[in-house]
Amino acid sequence: MKLLKNRGVAVVLTLAVIAVMAFWGIHKAPAQLPEVQTGHWVYDGADVLSAGEEQTLTQGNAALLSDHGAVVAVATMPDVKGWDLWDFCLDLADAWGLSGCDMILVLDIGGDDYWLVQGYDLVDSFTDDMATQYTRQYLENDFAAKEYGAGVVQLFEALRAWYDSSAAALPQSPYPADSDPVSFYDGGAVRT
Image (cartoon, rainbow, N blue to C red; front, side, top):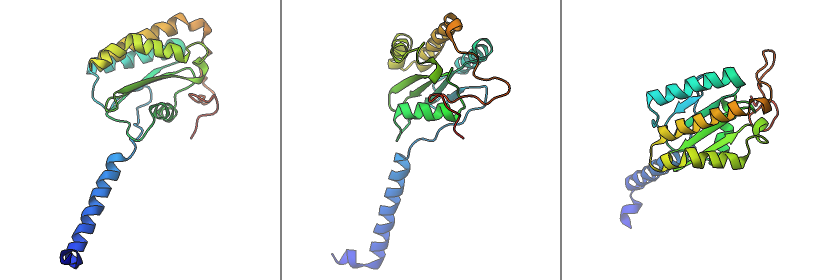
């Protein structure tokens, strides 16, 4: 007990506890929302997509935007620690300025999970059940095999086909030249 009464030992122990707690706090801090270059709509923070897969997604989104006024944004994260994945998707979609006609796919590699969320204007034509069906059919097996890029591209192509087949039922482009885009999920104005 005399050792703990020594002022030098007490200072060292206090600093050690502070350092451990700071490290723990940083380790447990929620993941930051990644930024993306407008028009790219692909963020590979987990480094699981090849250059060719990223190019396929980027070019596919350019075609989707041209043909249907929509994009399927993709983000791979090493870990969304501190976030509910659903909330992460919605906040990321809003941060990236996605509209109600868009979709977002987030892969949480560290959490071994993924989520596909459709924008507000699609919830009637592309239901939550359809999102689950599409991810199970086109992504699940590759995700489980850790072949993330192959699964993402396969799902993306299936979603592009859905947009093509549903074009008549889709709302008009959410990006009229004289207005701001609408919010991704709540149907209101984009949060700033």
